[in-house]
Image (cartoon, rainbow, N blue to C red):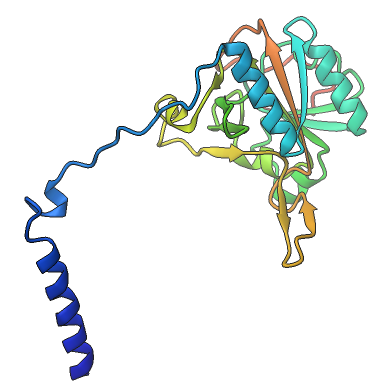
Length: 238
């Protein structure tokens, strides 16, 4: 014990000696935060292209369409996945699922447990924003995105990003636009992990398939307006 105390005392003595020419204590010195906010000058179109490139690198499926084509695009993605049921957040914009006539739609999903959500094929949401340099989609559980669990349990996630207004270049640009008290989910591609032999396994901690739709010309979602008129809505949905 004496040796341990002596070693600790000696280490602290050396640290104090090394800091004798430093004014103030570490807590009193300002921390410089003059790091780069962005790492290149890009046009909005270039930022969107970079986002698409990185999402594809992470094995997400990237699609582009106009606001007018969005309902058809979403319906085609659900059909291609073989989805017969979908859960959507309460403020998903009206009309987005008007072409999904043969799919059972549950709005909200707050009353569904994990096992019930696991039986739902797909989820369709908006996002808070997307980060081009990292290929990351950020969700913040706003009414157009729903509670976190509806985006983590179903095996297929269709996430709509409005471009260019929801695309930022970097994480430092994203943080001021996000509310730190909200439950943020950062998504870079479909859920995946690897074992010690580096064998990739997808769908472990979230959806196995991620379809990202980059939509241009879309109007911002109307907060609080539930898609009550969507075809095939499940009885009792919020």
